Length: 293
Ligand SMILES: [Mg+2]
Image: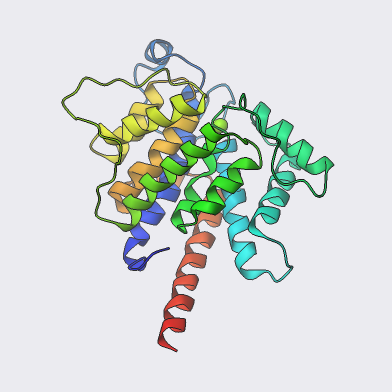
């Protein structure tokens, strides 16, 4: 975290809740085309569950579950004196998570985590330029919150080791970190509001996912509009709406997120997010006290 972070807590909570809420809302329309969403729902304007995973309203998918793994790894690496690194904790959390037989897991993540489990010493995957799904990008929020870019690119390589996925994590991290801790400019990528721009196919390819989330965050004006627009566009809607929600939550703040969605969100997810928020507040206090000594 950077200075003035307590003031940023509304934005930090916005990013965390925004991500999980985007996942829960987008899961309803995952794998549908925008036309199929229109035919089936007219327009999604609430957190209703269902979708191909037949979720309860407020239930999240692998995106949030893996983000929580990274959050737990960060906290353990700060506080548990077991001599393990952030990456070792991250690996261990991914393996524990896969062992719970999660409701959904991407093919590359499953393959990579099983290979980590099979080899005690293994951390990074072998370089694989074809592993271009969004499974590592979707875990980028927590390390951006603690301003650890190296942690973020490394956690990505646990499952997706190639320059494209690493670069996208880096871009997302920088955009989110700037939203949280600076007054802008938020983009190094120029995007003209007047220019006709439509995101590419909302697929699970990491590049498509990245541009889609950037688009919905940038060309909407409220948290609600950003997340619902991403969800109504279908495709890999849970991941795209989650990553959009992370950015929009940071931009507009936790206070801007409709309370009915926070109330409906899975209680275990809320509990874990709140633990992380408390961890950040404690960390801030430690940093402040150290400066005073
Ligand atoms: Mg998912």
